Image 1: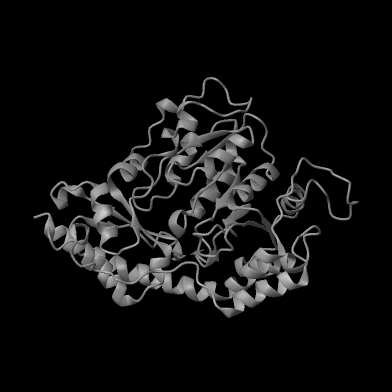
Image 2: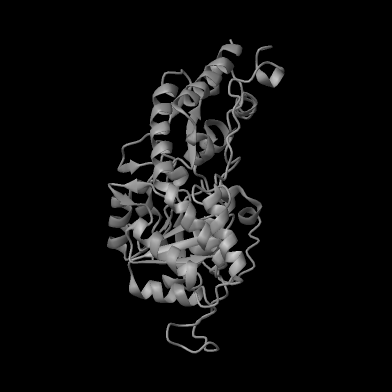
Length: 403
């Protein structure tokens, strides 16, 4: 054990993986906006409109609308899809809190459906059993940048007349059967928060091909105004969810690198799968279920502590991080175990008293949270092929120390 970095031994990986990445073109683009004095975005025009057109073209959609963050992107999409108080929305329990909390903000009921043990995405085969007369939408999360099984999800949604809102906040540049994530359902939602594969520190965007959804989301993000209306004419219960020209011009500059960066992450993830699959007790998540490009916002593998002499996942993740691998043990518990759901601190009027999240059980999610899932962060997936080998070597080093 003395050779482990956590005990003072040498690190396996000595490189610092910086994020975000930028150069003088990014700095100049922002500086030019600062010098112009036109920082705001009252008319949703200028650099903001330019970036929206660029991102829509990138995703292959008719429209793209920026907003302040990915959570608001989901909220705009859900409200535009016409949900009413008390309606139910199907979500996975293995995702960031916003996927479910925006449902509550809309006075609707999150219904948790377990994840697929192969991919950690929403299990498409379990959706239909969760549908009731009050179900109005499904929010599949392309978790870690791995595409959900969208053909099956869209098929079920069409049968039951449900909207599909893709949470693609991890999925910039990723593809399902050659289609960019976010472009497959009724609406796609992305985040530009500081950890994301495309970032401006904060920000979000929605994409769609639906004219009606576009018009409503455009109104909601701009204080209820409508195209062609007067400045002080407000038609819908929207708010100011606009981003700034500074964010937009930075995103346009960063977008030029995204395709190449995504290709690097995809290739590195594919290679790391090969390496880790050779280590007893380490299992990469399954690929090739429709995913054609994986953005690897997170590289996730399954850890089996029984193969590491009972070493807990928490301790393993600490050791791996000490070896210089930018990693994390992942979500510590499913969303329905959060105090928000256990105590029903909803601050809204439409969720029935009969809703009881204390009785929810999603065994696959619980196994991932408590025992299996270990994450390597996206900026590390921009490393070299040699560094992927070092990631695997660090795991082997820890495994040997447990014998």
